Image 1: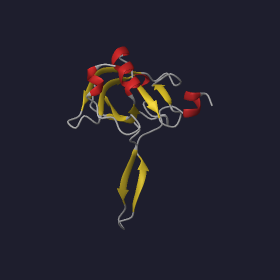
Image 2: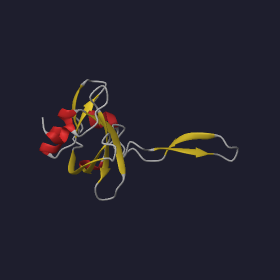
Image 3: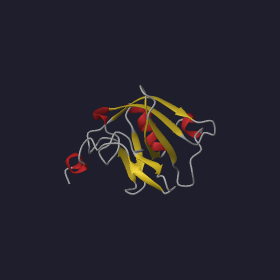
Image 4: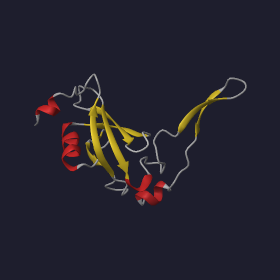
Amino acid sequence: MSDWLDAVKWDAQGLVPAIAQDAASGEILMVAWMNREALEETARTGRGVYFSRSRHKLWRKGEESGHVQTVSEIRLDCDNDVILLKIEQLGGIACHTGRRSCFFHKLTTDDRGHADWVATEPVLKNPDEIYRR
């Protein structure tokens, strides 16, 4: 392993949160987790690689959907415990729901003060078509 990987403050499970940000627009597209192997592979290949906590294995973004992330820059925050990936999202869809961004729920409040989450971004492609379920 490289010294630069040792600078990252990994959590007790050996993970660090990673933010994927559109390099051109600055839009936050998704947040995922990385382990050392995922971060090293991302740096080496220039493609977004994460660690799937549910599947307990590396998740190479786009390996099933075709929505690959090309990484142009990797940054580490001031506390060394969050990774920022500046990316180009191929196919324009980062979210498994078929939307551009995973951050499509917006908290809104009606005239009576009742708050609720509302989906504000359109589905660009049906997930069943993306993942051939």
